[in-house]
Image 1 (cartoon, helix red, strand yellow):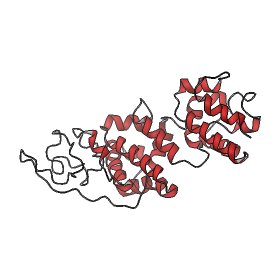
Image 2 (cartoon, helix red, strand yellow):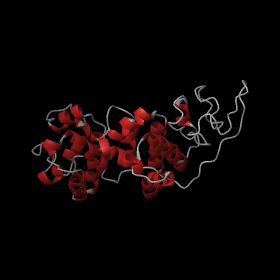
Image 3 (cartoon, helix red, strand yellow):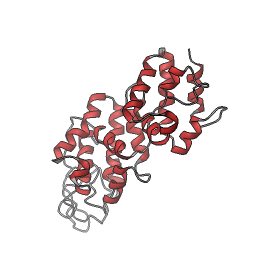
Image 4 (cartoon, helix red, strand yellow):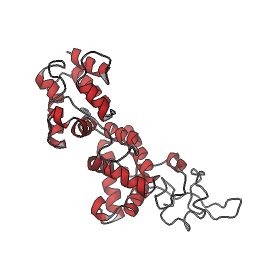
Length: 278
């Protein structure tokens, strides 16, 4: 069910209207894993030597921010990939500046993501037998969506997670704390379908389970996508806009949105557009 049925469209319309994303335990971890992909291989960066004579073979020129905490990069930090696409959690001293390396590919970011994931979490949690299994799964969503927006969002979340130490990766995977939350929302929204239901349902199930009466994530998706399909084209755009907005809310804000009556309240502009569309 959707929020405040008497206030937002008809019961049918409103019942399908909860959407989008926010950091959420296993669902977020799984979404992130399946939200990356591209067929462009990552090439190794050029070999170089810094003024102190430290061998930095394998560190790309586009990643000059590698910290002294990883003095030998390849040799001293065996977990760091040759192209330095996101620097793995195996090199906790490496700066997060690597994450903004220009020319990064989805595949390269998936490599960095999977290196950190497999190094920091037991197989019982991540479920991948090999690193390549992880990379293949990571690339599926981006390949299937095929938009630059999804590719960019996928790279961002992969690089954010790859730049974390093991404790941070564990927190992100389990949905505790506020680790890479903006990037998680971004990939859920940008790699989602036109109805923008994935992110909405993450918030709805995590924060509004009693109000929305969804007993599972799949039930929310079915309801949300059905509501989208029942609308006119102009109202579909408004519906997706509201869902994308709700996906960015905290649980406290989601509650304010659900019970909101008189603007302003979170996502009130997007909700009013949906209410008044024809």
